[in-house]
Amino acid sequence: MKSFIEYLKEKKVQKQSPDPAEARSLFLQAEARLTDLKSLPIHETNASFRFEAAYEAIREALQAFLAREGYKPFSHEAVFAFAFESKLLSEKEMHRVDLYREITKTCPND
Image 1 (cartoon, rainbow, N blue to C red):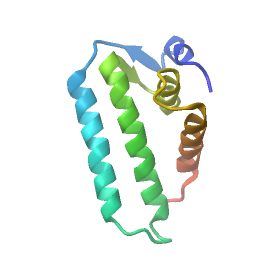
Image 2: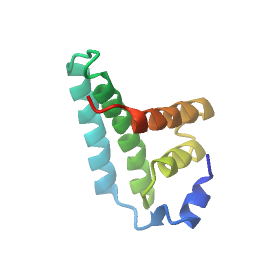
Image 3: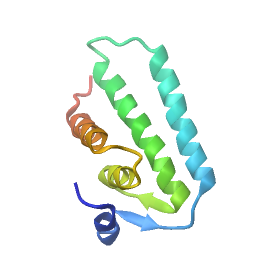
Image 4: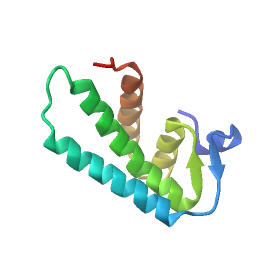
């Protein structure tokens, strides 16, 4: 994975003013998504949708930290690079979440 600064240079992240309101909104949305996800049954026919929802909750929660610091990402990879470099994720967690990102790109639409 590239460094966060590389994503900035490639304009896959834009520097802006810190946005605590957006950060809170993203975090609350991630929390609501997880709460909803926990209440839903998982079956073979909907497992890919549940997996995508879990991934999105992780991404939204991490993106909240970027908004708080004044960054607008246009790439999921940039979100994870920021999280890793900010010590929000360990190297192992970062690789696992990046694998989840790859899996969600190939999840069949049930």
